[in-house]
Structures are given as C-alpha cells and as structure tokens.
Image 1 (cartoon, rainbow, N blue to C red):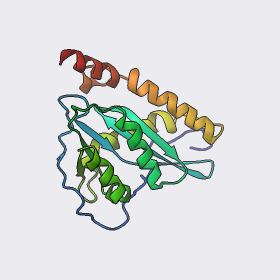
Image 2 (tube, rainbow, N blue to C red):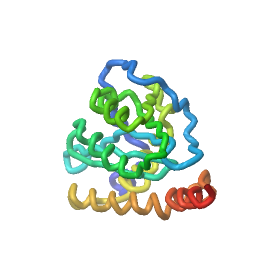
Image 3 (tube, rainbow, N blue to C red):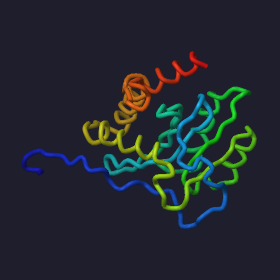
Image 4 (tube, helix red, strand yellow):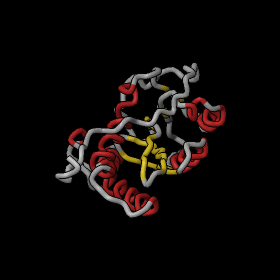
Length: 198
C-alpha cells in the first residue's frame, strides 16, 4: 500500500475518557431517542482524539440534530475542554428551553462541576450505559464521518493549520453537507425550517 501510495480509510481506535468507574451519576433518559421535536430539547456530547505530528489533540463538540453548536479543541483532555464548550453552548439557550444533555460515562461528565453547571440552568443530565456506543450513536457517527471525510483525506502543515481546516470543515458540515434524515437539508437549514414551521 505504501509503495502504491494507498491510504486505508478504516476508522481508527477511538479515545476513551472512561476511567474504570461506572458512575451512578445520571440514568439513560435519552434511551436512544435522538429525535428532537424542537431546537434546544436534546443535545449530545463526547470527546474524540486526534494524533498529529507526534502530538494528541482532543475535540469536545456539542451536537443538536447533527449540527455542531459549539466545540473546543485542546492538547490535553482536561475538564476545561468540556466546561468551555458548555459555556459556548449555553449561549444558544433561551429562558423557555427545556434541555436534556446526553453523554457517555466519561470522567468529565461525572464531575461535580459539570453536574452543577447543568443543574444551575435546570438542564436534565442523561448518560449512556457503560461500554454501549449505540447509546450515543449520533455523536459517534459524526466522529466517524468527520475522520473519514476530513482527517484521513487531507494533509496538514501544522497543528495550527489542522485547527483552521477543522473550523472550515465544521462550517461546511453545518451549513452545506446535506443529510437524508434531515429531508435533504443541511443541519442549519433544517433547524431554520423547523423554527419557521413552529
């Protein structure tokens, strides 16, 4: 494959933020019912890892109906990766929104600060069952698509170049990349249409 210049598009092993403790932090309220009747009703989040230039990068996005509403990226998977992403996401909320945020059982989402940030805004916390990726299939699917379409097909000059290109890809993903399950619209087009219809 190397001699012929071929690249495999097989998905790489994923980053696991699970640290060996099964938490009783929150039940699986979402229960794989990912469809939201209106914006800011159900959000999903997780963390994925990239390996570039001998370094690791961690991406923490928040998704609604396939739309990336906020994200952070850093060289270490510290709690601030998640807390800063939460603060960006909260800017999308209004007083009337009744929101549920679903995640896996990663240590970030078991932290008291995370639980407090959600409770303070009357947000319901939901968590996947241990070791069950299908419980958070929407975000796992996004990570797979992003890595297949963006990470594995491009060459980057530096970490900074990667971050710039990632921002462009997310802009494309949100505004131009159509989805069959969203009636052939992009996530942003679908959200706007939903708001008009409501």
